[in-house]
Image 1 (tube, rainbow, N blue to C red):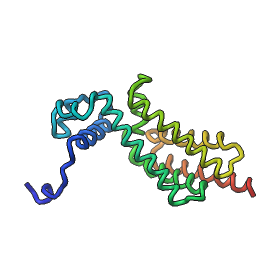
Image 2: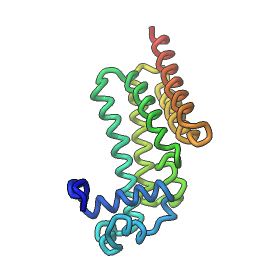
Image 3: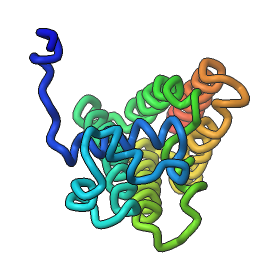
Length: 198
């Protein structure tokens, strides 16, 4: 055993299972991967997996919760950095999304892919993702109100359409172009709103 391997902390089984599932879902898709494959990739077995997750569907939902938690932490970070500047929060949000598009170029948005692979309305992961999207839209609406947009609901819908559209266009247009266009469009909307308010 090498010194490097000895120094690496060993994750608990639950975390190893989620990490293995995340890697496999991204590379192969949710439906293409079975629990035995996930357990083997996590260095454990099916029995251990089912001790931590009652079903594959619950594992998928937990994986989705992890993605959602990271995405929602970004809003907290932007609010802490620009507490009284919703316009700058919107601009930096677009810059952060543009940076993340590089990771999506391989297979697209993991949450969008999950929604397409999980058509059942009552799937636990689908409920997690849809609730996140509703919270995200409400957050953007709040920023648009705070930024003084004349029609904050319409502005929020436009921002959200830009976000969803950018994620969908990554594979056909390429990350660099989509990311640059997303940031430029958000900056133009914010600047037009500033000028209107003067």
